[in-house]
Every structure is written in C-alpha cells, then in structure tokens.
Length: 478
Image 1 (tube, helix red, strand yellow):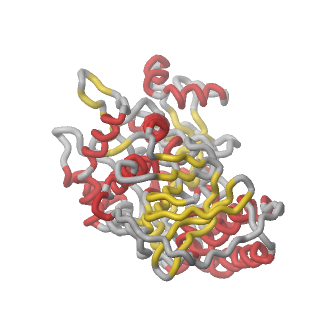
Image 2: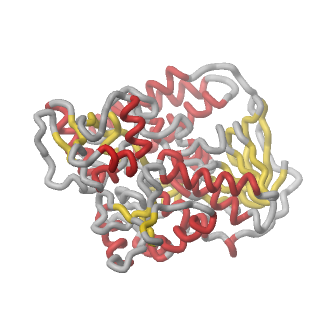
Image 3: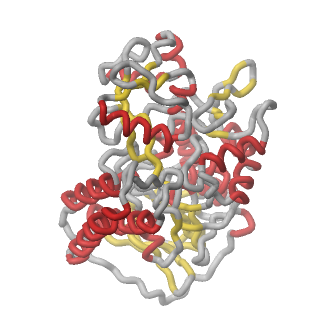
C-alpha cells in the first residue's frame, strides 16, 4: 500500500493531523484497535488556554514552568500557549460544544493552575473531542481508516523514513508513505495500576528507539492522585476538576492532611501515597447537592453510583495510578524528528512543554497545537524501488506472564517514590532478563510485540531514572 500521509494512532493528535493533511493528499490512518480507543477518550477535565480577560499569557506560562520544575523548554511552552486559544476555536469550528454561560465559555480550574482557564464539556471532554474528530475523519473522502492494524517497525533507509510495517489480519503488511506520523500515545500499561486503556503499551517510543531516534525525559512519569480505589482495569479516573469544584482530600479519620488540595499532581500523589500507608484516603464533595453533581459530573457520578458510591453523601476512596509520561521522542515545534519525513505528535513525543511534570489539561492542548503546525513541512518523496525490509513470521505464542511481570517491576522500581540503588541492582537487570527471554521467541504477533515494546521502554525509563540522582518534578528519589 502507498499513501501521501501515514498516520499511526487515533487520539486527538493523530486525528487532528489527519484532517489537516487530507487537504493536501491521501491519508491512511492506522490504529491498533478501534478508532475511538485512545487516551483522549479518557480525558475528563478539559483543555487549558488563555480565554478570559482576567487571565494572560504570562500567567499560564508561569504555571506551566513551575509545575514542570523549570525543566521545560520555555520556547516550546510559549509557542504552545500563544496558540492555545486558536486550538480551542478550531475545535469549536469542527463542532465541539464546550460548556457556555450567556454565550461565553465556562471555565474550570485544576491543580497547579492559578486561574480558571480550562474549557470543558461536562466531565467527558476528551470523549466529546474524540467523537467530533472521528465524525469528521469518517466524512473525509481523502482519509482511509485501517482499524486493528498494529505498527511493528518503521521502513527506513539511512536517515529517511519511507513508511511502516504492520500486523493486519494476522499478516505482515508494508505501507509506504511520503510522510509517516507517530501519534501512538503513552505507556500507562507498563504499570500494574494505571488509568490508561489496554492499548497504551509504549509502542511508538519503542519503534522510535529501535529506529535510532533520540528520546528524552522518560523518567518523568506522572501518577494521577485520584483514581478510584477499586479493582478496575483500567482504573477509573476521578478528574482533578472534582477538587477544582470543591472536593477535599481527607484521611480515614476524616481529617484533611494537605495544605493545598489543588497543588500539582506530583505533590498530591505523593501525599496521598504516604498517607495511605496509615489507612484509606478519600475524596469528599458532600458539600455539593446531588442535582449540582449530576449536572456537572454526569459520567463520574454514574460510574461511582455503579460502584456503590453516592458523591453527595459518601466518601470516595482514591489512590494514585500511572497516568502520563512527560518525555518521549524528541521533536521540534513542527513535530519533525531527526529522521527525514518522520513526524511525531502527542504523548509519544518530548516537545519540552511539560518539563519534569505535566500541568493538568495541557496535554490535550499540546496534542492539538503541535499537530496544527504542519503546512510548510509536508513534501512528496519518491519511494526507492529497493528498500531492505525484513518480513517476520507470525507466531501464536502468548506473552501475558511477561507483561504482568514487567508491570510489577515498573510499579516497584519506577513508581511514585524511587530508590536509585534498587533500580540499578534489581529493576534494570530484571527487565534486561525479560528482554532476552522475549528475544529468544521466534516470530511475532501483536501480544508478543507489545511485551517486547514494554520491556524495551521500561528498561529505558529505569535507566533514565537511575541517572537522575536527585528529585525533580514527578521523579522523586527517597
């Protein structure tokens, strides 16, 4: 197969890029499961942008830099925030109906923000954005959608990318393209407890590492402080906007134990993690009425009710869970990687905007803003007739035990509080052993390829963490 643009991944950045690129040529959008399976779908809170007269560009930049422990690339932060309002208005043009009051956008607040600057749609902003973008994608005659199509490795010669190899319909297929775009999302499934869907196995980062791309800041894994403390997979996220609208964090004695319930996620996650050693930690929003909660948080209210909790009177048990990676494949402000004709957008990248810790609701914004910047970088290329492409064989071997072990290793050694000596002495050797065992298995399949990706990215995360001796942002060393 051959196309002008090959987009791998169907979250907000992949879908948004595909819509732009479709104006310039043919697009193939390949996604490993269904089109709507992505982290975007799970984003409850909203999108941060400078949208209010009482807010300004400098304040949003300052909050982002502070939350990122000043490890951010300030140029990238300024670029993102300068383009933030435009990104929101683009979504409105596409059909996203953000909450309004008297014709003006309603704004909420989340941890780390000093202003109400987050545009939202109830408590399912990501799901609504995904729905609208998918609708527009399906309507576009220039976009071909390939579901259940799993990316294995890039097709490249020297430092030029010519496409990607996939597992599709239990066969290996090569898709050649003028431009290849990695928009494969995050790594949450590397951890035992995560808010991420099953697809988030770090595939894009692993593909990038094998292709020789530079990766950066992989040690900065953000743990969301308030996942519902109930055995669900993925764990159910209780949005920060619940605290933004007045919920308090309390211990099992009913007492508040934090100075600021709306501190940045890394701080809140650590405080809850420590306090939970003395007993269960809860969210309490019983100061609000049922009618308010049902209207403001319809999705969260319904899910909690199914799990036996009524928000207006019950304390909601919460626990931290792996949520988001701040690092990834290094790109410029246009998504260009070090390999010619290979771009990357969204959580798979390290643009530098998040620094050592992500500011809430900047992630959907990053995915949108950077995938908007495409125009002058897109050029047609001639595909050489002879490109060396290995065709692996398909095997039926399962890798479930390996995946479970990787998750346990990562939770223990790359968790909320880390020990550098143990990472080097125990964590890294365990993952290297798993990598070797997986390498002995002949052939490939999606399950096996995911496990190999998880082990490879996990090793890289632990290696990055071991080199950073001191605490910074969400990398916290005991």
